[in-house]
Length: 394
Image 1 (tube, rainbow, N blue to C red):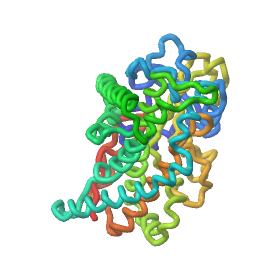
Image 2: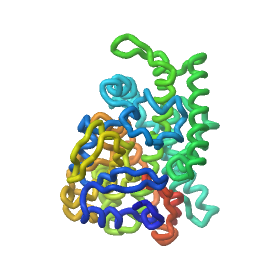
Image 3: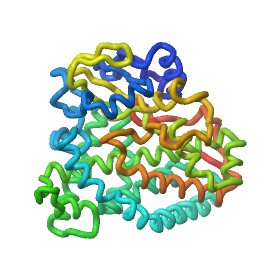
């Protein structure tokens, strides 16, 4: 069982050790369930694109209970849990929100939001000894605002997002279930409200849109799509901003290079997503048939956990994987996944992160950690590694 206190504090030594022992490992998850942990780059890529490795719950062994904390309505028939061709139909509907032209229209909103958040950091710093928590002051509220505006989530509900994510990915099973149920009830209410009073938001679009056959999405498909856009649409972006700044503030030469050459920031972020991206593991896969992977015999129905973070440090793919190299090829990392389920909001996340980091370094050139790096508390999750707080001085 590799997921222990040492792992949550710093998973990278665990990955480094596992890489010396093989690319696919039989493990036990914290809830006691057996699974295959896939850490090799080629093996992870195979699972991401090979149709013998599926997401549909129907293929799982009878004793699989890993989705039990999700509300029943969103456990199936949604864009996250389906496979092609059903996934393809749903994904086409989701892609409308993330068209390049629509993302570019959001640039002004993101720039304004970043400016307002940095203004608040500066103002609050005058009474707080020029200190701030970058997670609560910038990394979390920025993507929350963006995804909530896209979907039309009422502002009073938005402060709940962070707590729901922390419990869903790092809480006890009871906390996870309670938070995921609260999110479900909020989404259900939002969809019901938009059916009566549609607005210019993506939730209203999903209710009225039709697929290639002229058919509307059914209720659980609309709710499931909104639900998972919220659950996955802000937390990984917040984590990337936090993890990136945590890494940069420990490496003065790299930090100075980006201050002196801000045009490098978009490329640097790609390498930092490989190096410290928050997404440790992707959505579980099941073997649709008996298959050999990484020298291991995987049985039909077995659960596979694809460790994206370990694949991003695979020595057979990335020379000197524990070093940051801004010249690495941009498209090689799997921080956003690959294949049919690649993150639909990847380009939006890139834009948010680039604007946030660029403006943060420009506005606060003397930024530094306010506590030793090893004093940062991390979420207890093998899915998303996110700092609970990131205290800084500026």
